[in-house]
Image (cartoon, rainbow, N blue to C red; front, side, top):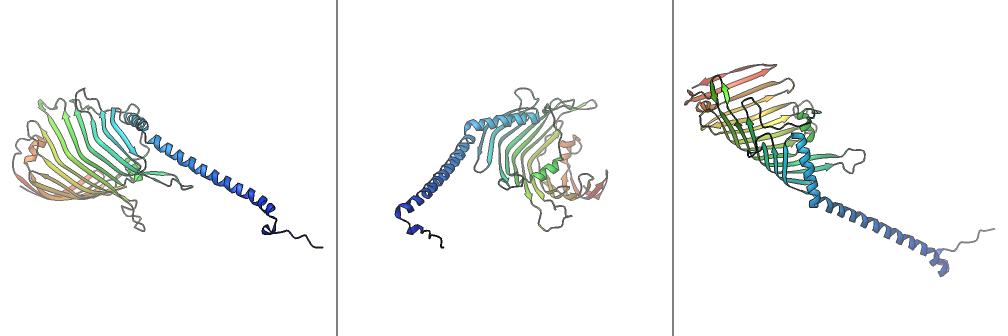
Length: 348
């Protein structure tokens, strides 16, 4: 006895074939429209979220949150004139950041920055099992100015946070964990003002210090794969370039001597290498280089040479007899565990 042969779909009567295919087409249409609506809803949701976080109201909310955070961290009264961000490029900018300290009304504030901008990268956002990391790729601080007032009792106008927080780890560890791609500080100024005077016996010695046009650039150098694990840069390093084109410091009635400082160094997790430090004043130059191999137990070496106009000593030390003359210096020094030694030649 044989089983009855089941007719194929194309051998079925037309009415039976249409009856079987109709539910399949209906199911495919439902799947298509359902998927389309889900995609459309997701796109609309993303657009609405993008519109909300890009709106002026949201930027103002972030600005107020930033002000509160900086005030808690510094203890000063904070103002931010404008805040804006570019969500697509993960970039934010703030204009007119001011921190008021303990200075009296009508006096220049403790700190002011014309513009701060930063750009971040988000890593492992969609990677399962891996924590999401936010890295600061680029930061720029334009025209920062700091105004420090020193009173006769040593107090200053620097604000203090109401609830100081203890650091969970050393600053150097935090800096290296951050792996900042690039940090630039441009056209900065520092003004230290003697509110009353400094007393030395019966003599009153006022002083003033000002640094103009300070520039700093910090860039991250990742560790070389396959490199020596015991090398100083085994965990990466930072290249630090710094320049201050106009430093002025004077005591008493002496006129300040414009001085320029340029430095280039490598910062490691537990040490640094000073490639060059150049000090230029009154047409004379002094060059230094050296290294430090441990922050916990410092072991340092430094070597330098050049010329120094003793006229700079009058304004910085207040010693009026040091008015003219050239010093030729060639020296080498080292130290550890609180002891040091310096050897070299000094010619006038």
